Image (cartoon, rainbow, N blue to C red; front, side):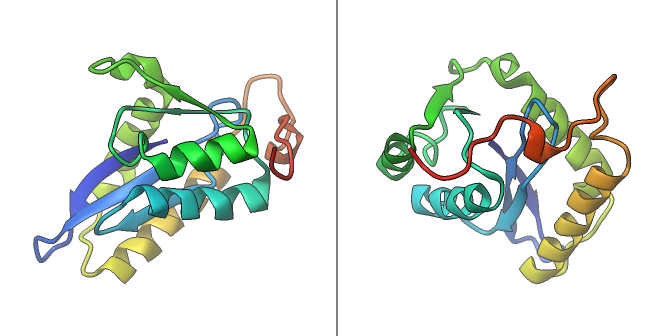
Length: 155
């Protein structure tokens, strides 16, 4: 999980929460908003995990939303380990950094966002394109995301 920053055509700041499964390369959520707090991240994770299952581990950086008490409590209650990268070491979370680079090049840099709703629509369209463009096919693998070892339910 990570954040990518951009802006609306009017200059308003925009943050996109990027969530990616590093094994299957499935992205269950790309969520643009103006601001995020720990409770907002928890709400996104709760929605996503109820749809696709709870991961054993979530790799994050040291951002304030990720070191929040809200996220720590959510992870503890559901038996999810938060794996924090070392400060100043983006290579600890290299896959999300590569994904974010592709997302920026193919979506954020390719579009003007006129409003938050416009950004949400274009980001979701790109997320679906990413899933169906062949990006998720791993060499020698025919497994779908639901077969990749995610567990349903909490704790």
